[in-house]
Structures are given as structure tokens and as C-alpha cells.
Image 1 (cartoon, rainbow, N blue to C red):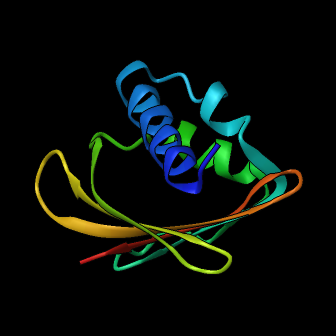
Image 2 (tube, rainbow, N blue to C red):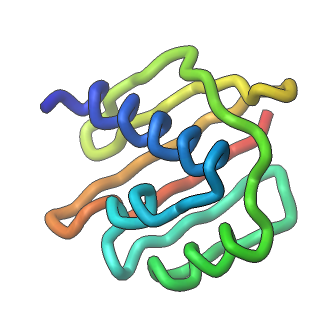
Length: 108
């Protein structure tokens, strides 16, 4: 599977979880030691799949994402997106053998 397709599947899982409130499938793609960080909003970082799960459980997002562009860097997928309720951002995804190791979300 190409990196672009994996990025699209990641966003599709995120959007499905936002709509349903069930984060299990989304969280299953994260490595146990995954780190999620945010730039432009005062939350996180969250270290470890369990901490990320608690963050989504206690403060679930309400916006879905629409991909505008996917760029592949040497070790990262850089996804430019638009939020369903307005605004744009960039999601950087890094992967390892155990799944996604780093999610970095930057709000524009």
C-alpha cells in the first residue's frame, strides 16, 4: 500500500471515529508508544496510545477533515487538510514497525 493511500485511510478512520464516537479502530493503528502533539491549540502532547485514547474520550473532536494534499517526505506523510467547520491545518504522520509512532497536528 502506498503512503498516500495509508494517509487517506488514516483520515477516513479519524472521520469515522468523530462521527460515531468509537475510537477503537483509529487507536488500533497507533504504536503503543505513539506521541500526539498539537501546534496552535493549547492541548497535549499525549504520550502513549492509552493517553491518546483518554484524550479522545474526555475531549472528543467534533470536526472532520478533508484532505487537500498529501506530500511524502523521507520518513513522514504530510497531509494538508481543511476542517469541516472551517480552518485548515497540516497533519504529519510518522510510522514504525508497530504502527503510527507520531502524529503532529498544526492548525493554520
